[in-house]
Image 1 (cartoon, rainbow, N blue to C red):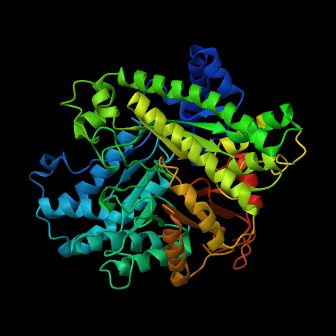
Image 2: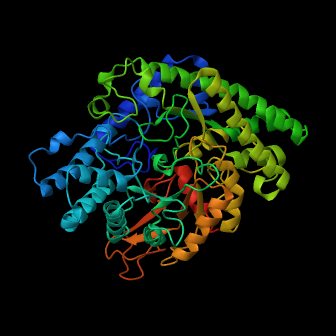
Image 3: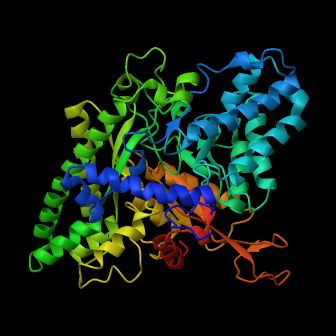
Length: 566
């Protein structure tokens, strides 16, 4: 069965998925047709992209689960210890399934190790007596995350387990087992997303009690690109309790809350919309070809202001419509109280969703600056200052909206899986700029340096690090390696230190990984050097998470072709 589109690399072909995709496209158009004409036109013409458009008026985006405060311990009454352990992991999978069909985006445990340890303690289970059962259950949970594509009949669940701050030996065992089982399951297992929290006094330095877990994590990353690293000591994070920090999905960050909660637990993103920066720059280039770069940049900011004001209106409208729904529209949240406010006690949904974020995102900063000035922003210090200043400008606008409307507006460094190609396909039909930004077939993610820059890894980290402080809705920096750095945990550890000192909030390591479907040999090849098989699975990071290259959007496939090692 032919897939209607490859908007999402996590999709797999199925009858139910085919029918869903047909209905989804119709429903998206219905939503756009009901919107004010200006809103719909901006989306359709590619000035903006309204993410999860099909969720408009139906649900929110993502959530870090408030799993402990109302955990259903009554479900475990009458079970023996082994049954309790097995039931716990069955409950987790059921929870992900139900919640994954109740919201549009990712789900996360902020502290998978500590949270499970607390559950075991409350259930009076000595988990050290049942290590083999724990290993088996965690192994099956990993395989379920990796292999299950039942969401919408085609898609895997976006699940993130944050670990690394294990407080006791039970939590350390859970973290160790998660890493160990994930690594042992081989290269064709690349989900769930695992994020390791690096924090001085706990896991960062050799004298820290969880440093051994960090070393094990790095060795796993050197083979499989997972875990990625939440750097709790970087400038943007070091004043926040690391226990309440969390990554959701591919990069979402939720920390400061106007309504009293600090951190991500029980909070999520309500909605996000991305702005096409290259398109704005292309319009300025077309309308003012003879103006100075300074003047053109001023026009660029003015155009962005007008579009961002509309984006604000769309986000507020989406929030208001969401809050007009009934609590019964969220049965899983209602049953398990997964947000920081109780669904049962809240008078209305505003008391709950006011804790969520409304994110203004962006893509193509690199191309936009190059169009305006004629140079890439990372090749010229004046341009770098210009680029950083503009991101600060966008953040200041989000902060203004936060105060003006008393809603948690944030600036998101967008994950551009679909729009990296969608925007460029629309723009090249209209514009013919002197600077060739179209032939490569994609726009560069958010503030990222071009994937073919050839900059050394440390330099890329240092240049991108300052942008992390501005993008409070979430961001990530990647280092592209030429091949898997097997056993080189020391090298990756050096990069972590460089990133922390550069202000990087969240760091990942990329490298090409090809796996033979016959003998499981991995490396970089199209034909297996071991058995001669040509059925090869090409695993790459798409936009924060790993997937099979064949399912990438066209824009992301083009980006992969252009990637060069740092």
